[in-house]
Length: 192
Image 1 (cartoon, one colour):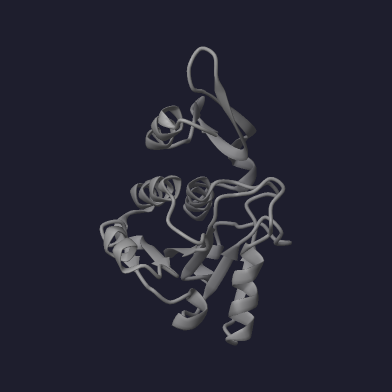
Image 2 (image 1 turned 30 degrees about the horizontal axis):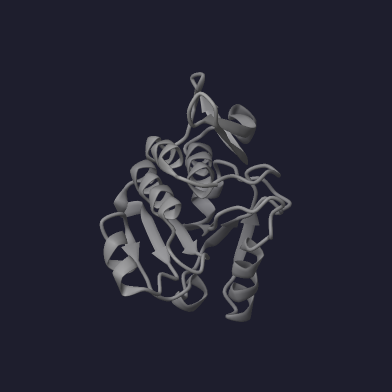
């Protein structure tokens, strides 16, 4: 099974690079595919994290595709690892409320007559790296209800400031699943 990140941002922001690095660590370089990476400099950078395509997934003709979307009617389950070869996530900085940009992937696949199905990981928006982590856990045998989630996270920047992240995260062994590099990035930022 391969995890595909369809890059949907207009550029490659630093937070995005951190999430993509974290996804590569989670699933392994050989199981990760980046699509829609138009800038050659960015493509070169991401080759150390996974396979990189300039084209969108809708132009690559992959079969056995499952799009992960919080709006899908059916939840992802372990048996889906036998049904699908590619699990597609939108590489998006989530907006609150969500703009539903993952639906753009589905529209493009339909337009190119590529068959696919959609699954959810619950009905809340997650950062891309957390969504991939949750999907991997489910495809390896956990059920969605086995995962412990926390909605909205407050990250302390210093004794006077914090950053509110209005997304769903996983808590495992009483520890928030979040990239240490992301925490470092948030704490170093000058403005929010």
